[in-house]
Image (cartoon, rainbow, N blue to C red; front, side, top):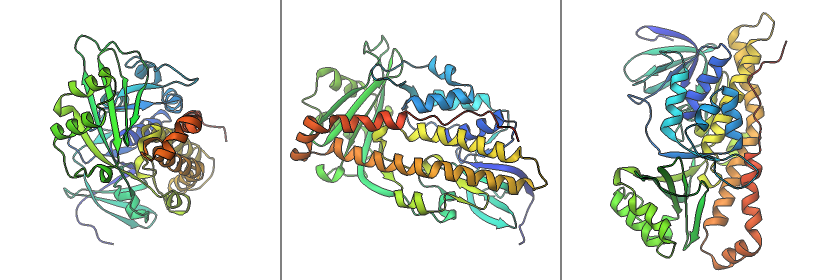
Length: 388
């Protein structure tokens, strides 16, 4: 195969500089394994406002050595026997980037093609650069090019959307550190304090039920829509949405990967794998999207580290393939469970069907709460390598 221009050699390439990509790079770095992150944006991603981090995410962050640093930037959410905090997305990304060696992330690096070259992968960038890697890790989100190259099917529309916002109270919001939730009229709204002044909120709904134009991106209309659907809520709920600045409101169409594609599809393929949203895009109904991505990163780093530390004459690329296979076996069922459970919980919580709503209030409440606890009660393990 002929390739024009200079080819740069890298052992491990990570596609995508979001939470999954940076966390994976940090996990590998903690084990003394070098990697390079390719990020298409010109700078650290700023999309998204905040996210809920459950016990499983904090276990993973502790394994990476940054749990306490993130706790210092957030408030513990009260209730339950698990650790939960709402953190600002930029706080997490900036901390991850700071913990990495310089030049670990190359921005303005948009991938346009992936090719096989013997036991290696050739990764072509839009500006003409070409990398040859022993292992390629796809952390490039819901519309992952790496997942597509591996033959995974495109994520499915959930038929739902989410309007999200972040509001700052200069003098302090005065809310207790807990998750506030409102259900009614076919929408689900929740909000939680990130710190003493910032509050993150979300509203999920089914656009077809309200004849909502899914191409509508006007933040004024987004706010008006949310306000109209929660008009019977308490004043403090309305105030959170009303105070939100227009540049702090966004809309996303919810997608998920078919659980059957996760179980039977190629999530690992000859030195290539996907993780985070590239592996298991899911509806946000469990608040586990970022949490499970961080889990993935710790597990993947450990699997690669253990494979590379094995004594033997095998080439590194063979060991890496073995480590990725271990990762796939360990994460396949967990990913299947997360995606399918989130979808079912979302249907039960958001439905406006009177029959289902009645039984949800009377009998199903514990069954819609229990999955949060069960999915958050997961230990991905540490990064200490076993002896060989």
